[in-house]
Image 1 (cartoon, rainbow, N blue to C red):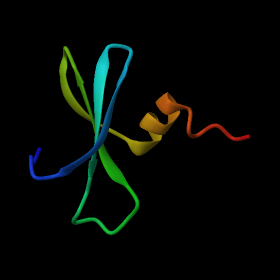
Image 2: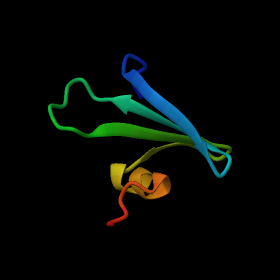
Image 3: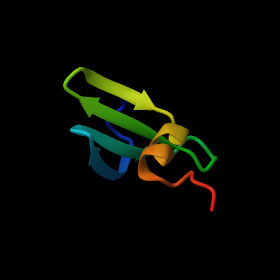
Length: 59
């Protein structure tokens, strides 16, 4: 992963560190979400992170 991406925020969930990076070359509203766990680093979907944070629940 390119280290020149701007880190937007980070948070911990179930002992995994999640970092949210802005995609400057992409003109959409999506960001890149990277989770770092003891097993390694993974790119997560925006939908999965919204589910973790409880942002996708319909009211």
